[in-house]
Each structure stands twice: as C-alpha cells, then as structure tokens.
Length: 259
Image 1: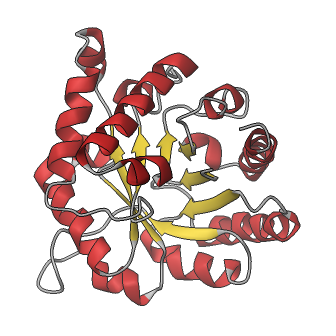
Image 2 (image 1 turned 30 degrees about the horizontal axis):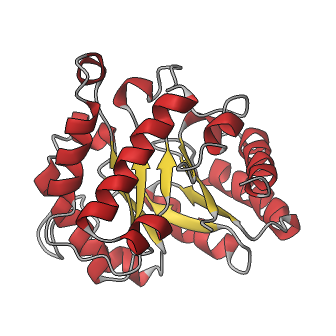
C-alpha cells in the first residue's frame, strides 16, 4: 500500500522570522506525529531552506526546494543549481509548477531537463502537471496530461516508482478557490496511473505517489484523499498557517487508516 504525502508549497511567502516560527511549531507537532504512513514536507523559499532543514533535523518532517535551474553551475545570475540543492541534502524539489510554466515560460522540454538534473543528484522531483480551464472545458484534460507526461518524462527511466512524485494540479483550481470534485480529481489520477502502467510497468504505477493540488483546504482534503488513486496533496495557501496544515495532517492520519 502507498503512504500519503502532504507537501506545503509556501511559494514567495514568509520571511526568516516567520519561517522559524512556523517550522518550530511544525517541529513540535512532528515529534508527536506517530502515523508513519503520512509524510510531511514543506517547501520554503530558497534563502531559508537551510534554516528549515536544520530545525527539522531529527523529525519526520522533510524540506523541499520550490524549483531548480535548468543549468549547471556557471554564469547564470540568480539561479540555483541541482548541485547546490544536493549540497543541502534536500530530499525533494518541486518542478514544473504551473506558475513556473505561466510566469517564467517553462516548457515541457525545460521541465524534462530540470527533472534529469535533480534525479542525477539523488533528489526526488515533485513533478507538476495539469490542464488550463479552457482545456478542461474542451475535454482535452487527458490529452494535455498525456503530452506533459510523455515530454516531461522523456528518456527518464523509472525502476521502482519511488524515484519521483507526480502532482496533478489543474491550473484552473490553483489559487482560485475552485477545486476539482473528488471524482474529477480521481479520474485524472486514474488516467495518470494507467499511463504509468502502460509506459513503464505495473510496479511503477502501483508504487508512485500521485498528489492532488489546487485550492486544497482542511474542509475539502478528506474527500479528495479518500479517492483510491490520490496519495495526498501539494498544498499552497492553506499550508501557510500552521493550524491549517497540521489539521490536514491529522485528517491524513485518519484517512490512511481507511485506505
């Protein structure tokens, strides 16, 4: 059986003091967190990755970067390479988030390069895919997901399914307050898992975690996570408040016992 993962993507929020305060509270919670089948991940901004990592050392909670450069070390002002992230011993890095695709013109090819960079350094990518509203309304969701999977994972070999995590995030639900219905989310996750089975194998398909993201909150997360192919959530705004994030972790602890 797959475990559940809740990953809080803080985006461009929280200064140093706010990061320390949140992480200290999460550290206290994580020490009491006894459900080993619920994985806790937070993704602070670049300047505070080391702070968060050091504070959470020895707890079940883990730290992820929000992005990585497509370039190796060199004259790329403002960029952060996979080599640098690896030197912090980070276990995860978010790649291909719709905001990177929308505001920074990242393509499926760019995402593919970034996935390869972090995999080379032993970092597990949280690989984001999802359709825009007009694509959903045109009934092109599966077509979009298929393209993003094919091009994003081009020439990437998966042996166990634990090399990456996939996050299905319908763009129309990110930061909008709209959320896919549990059935809509399940249908997309089921399609992704079937694609993995067809293009890799059943073992990879069965073991690989697929998260849902898009306006996930304490009051809607349970019904989403109860779906058979949804293995947790990549959470944006609702992960910024400790009480909301821990409430969702508590819910995940209840759900994992039912799945």
